[in-house]
Image (tube, rainbow, N blue to C red; front, side, top):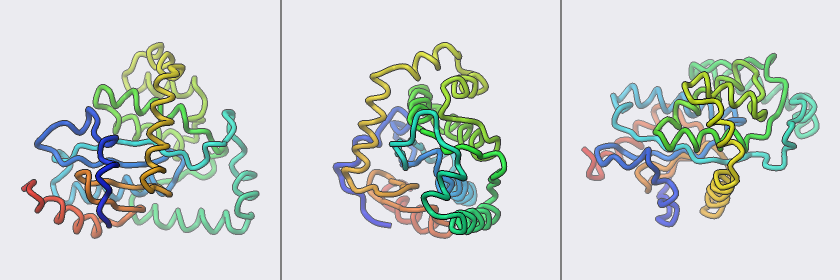
Length: 233
């Protein structure tokens, strides 16, 4: 946990974090990152343990672990074997499965057959955030990819997910083709890198406290104690 530079605060202030009675919490994340799914779940557990779920306003900020991933994606096993080697891939998946089990997360490795480009998924979250539903869309995308094995790099899949969340499908399709929204997402990703985010998940609490990685609930207990004694009792 460290202090977050003041220059990074502005991009974390969105419509989801303007309510003065809530503690702002920005999460830099990538849907294609399994540790981000685990980190999200661990945070939610900690919030529930401390009765803080309704006292925190979460903003999701985009980060692409592999921005050069082709738009059509790649076979996941082939991609990871080329990157890490077959033995290392299996070791990583075993470690992730153990951490997930402890955290209450389920990964359906058999269904996750493709490594995807997540640019449009981040655009969908950003669009949902304008009506204060960024967290709901993020949860739906994590489930769609890691548990249902859906191709969240595909525009029609994303439109369908938006429809399942109660959004107008044509409006979602329009947003996913919106160049201004695309540039906004790219700009937010560049800003995260500029201020020192080199991996995800990365959490910014109250615009000041930075927490890196999928930390367990007991770490969050310390973070909340520090944040809430800073004038937010």
